[in-house]
Amino acid sequence: MPFGDGTGPSGQGAGTGRGMGSGRGSGGMRGSSSGAGTGGYCVCPSCKTRIPHQPGNPCYSLKCPKCGIQMVRG
Image 1 (cartoon, rainbow, N blue to C red):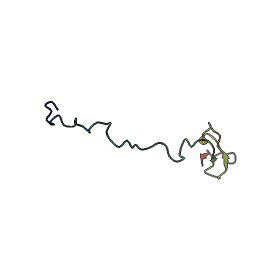
Image 2: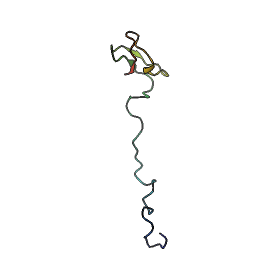
Image 3: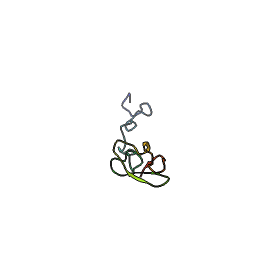
Image 4: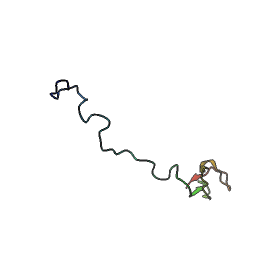
């Protein structure tokens, strides 16, 4: 607003910056799709064998002890 009359360049008035808004975002990780934390089980998608999840070892890095298929978190 060069003259103080409210006719400044468009898009640069109050309320047009990125800092305005309600402050709500999309949130963080929800559910158990990845990074599910400690506990739980690794499950074979083929034969449904369950083994306890070991922290630090992702389930997809394990093979089923019965049929050799890659385990998933369950």
